[in-house]
Length: 321
Length: 103
Image (cartoon, rainbow over all chains, first blue to last red; front, top):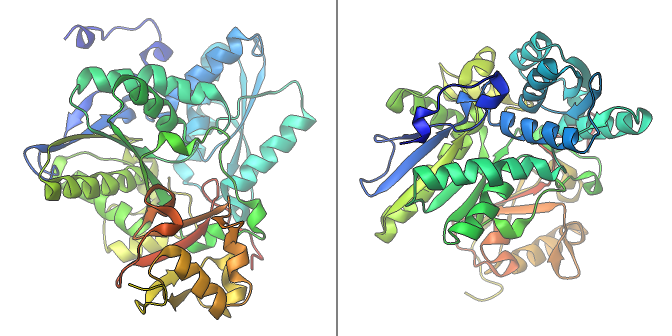
């Protein structure tokens, strides 16, 4: 237990990562088919994105792109921007986020608290539009440092060198790893680590399925696949809607006492589905999944109480993951 | 089950492709495999197959899920379909693109 002795850090950014892995004895489908939550809410700004943000910034510093006084630009639905803003504040950079209007009010408040400037992209464009606007701004402002989490290998490297090794150390018997699919950085980095060090671990994506309006492209060519995404790293990929995500995030609170954000509900839904399949097959499993963030930033959505269908309606049109 | 099997698979159509289904959000189609099902969709709705497939493969920005699982990881177009399965077609997006005025 050498690692748990290390609880002292010289500054906040040094405490990124090394998050606890918490067992879920009540939600695990059988005594030999266990679920484990990797508690990424324990990172300094409260989300898994601290890992990628720190890696991207340190890589840009090492390459000489980021210097004191530099301005960082990033399209984000919130968490990555919050992580970058915290580190930027400590290291003397300006932070500009391009963020869709239809994200929770708490994310916007947190960004402003850490000193970030927010450029809103239309709700009617979602993250696709935020990416497009940020790419244009990057062209118009060549002195700004465009870290670009969707295509920056440092995003997945943070998980290759952090999340993956931590999981294997804490859970040498791991059989499945499940995470959300957004930039794809968590799954690509952790997945590649296991491909090298324990290749039989299944790498499973849980992709949030938003309200149908969110998919209303004008043309299918406007579709977007993050540059980081390599489907050969994945074993399976599930699409999870708001109803199941809300149901599971409440179950996590009711049965295990863990207060998580909505996207974790989608991931837990996939984890429980996989667990039930393993039980049917008569095998054993240790299934680890990413708890992306805690529920604080989503209280204003009102999804933690009342009728689930009403909660689902409140999420319609929102980018909840 | 033969290629023209009757298994009444429910298919959810994304907004962008509804002009091909007269606005219907869900349609019913038949097929022993996903490939057969898409061919049947093409027969029922003129032009739809070409918006899903190119050179015998799914288009890059089209994702198809059977019972909420991405078919690219479970057999692709050869995946066998059974009565009671549900199929969802979605465009690949970066977590959202609800453009106003979308078709």
